[in-house]
Image (tube, rainbow, N blue to C red; front, top):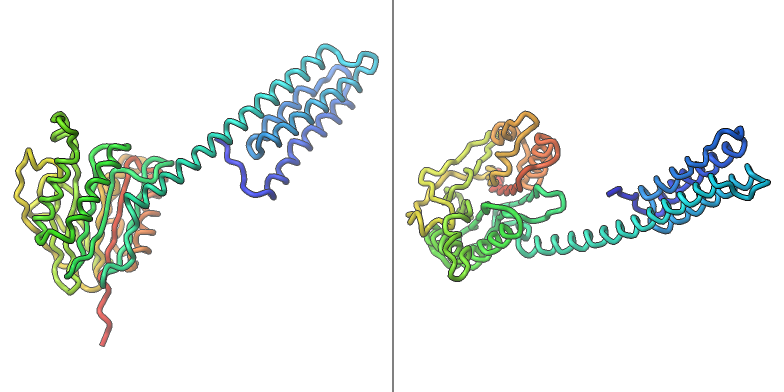
Length: 367
């Protein structure tokens, strides 16, 4: 749908275009030889008005076009009030004008409905996927969510953080599938994480609880057909407040990246676990991996919507290569640059939802 400029100023200026067009066509047609008829060009005036005006503006311009055509007919045929040709043109202008007014009414109604849907979607996102706090104890954090659908605000990618007595627990995940089903599954996992992150002592116990929750929640009562069909890849980690290694369990999820002085290091899981939701099939034993996270480091977590984004040639986004040498240490500034670089790489539109989380352990003050 054409987008109208907002505010009264641009609309007042643009309405001069169809009015000047009507005046110009009328004057030229009246002064032209009898065998030249420019009246049909008047239809262009109401035709372009919906690009910047509403139903009332279109109706006014259409009425002016009808009046101009009537004036042309009276001036050019003074003996005969209106010829059949001019009558046909007037009727055609009236039909076009009415049609355009109806179109504008329907368009504005649809635009209002879309605005309401966006409002509900944004409210749902704040409930299901609230933004990460900028501070997580001594850590600084930020997150970005990029939806593949232009009008979407939420999807199957997820992230959340929870404070514990000794550190921060963090989860980043991606639900298999799209649409409202994926949003519902993401909400279920996030709810289970928020409930258990403070309660389960060990990271392996927490992930086992999440796996059981996903298995239970993804199955409708009496249903067995979805077992193994719906799952969630996720990385769950413990980040201590004091200097020390990050403890992590990766359930089929892309590995995190640690940036130190602009040099990225990928941290693959040595003991990968199957995605959440497959526990009843795989019977996994969760083993905890660890990697260093020193003061001044930046930890980057993401979903496969980032690394599987493609450019015009079909090449995947080389995340580690692209962020090499970046000097941004602030998580928000880093993700802002990463978002811009990713969208530029793919030409402005992703094919899959993407979530990114950056966590910084601030450097120690110099003595």
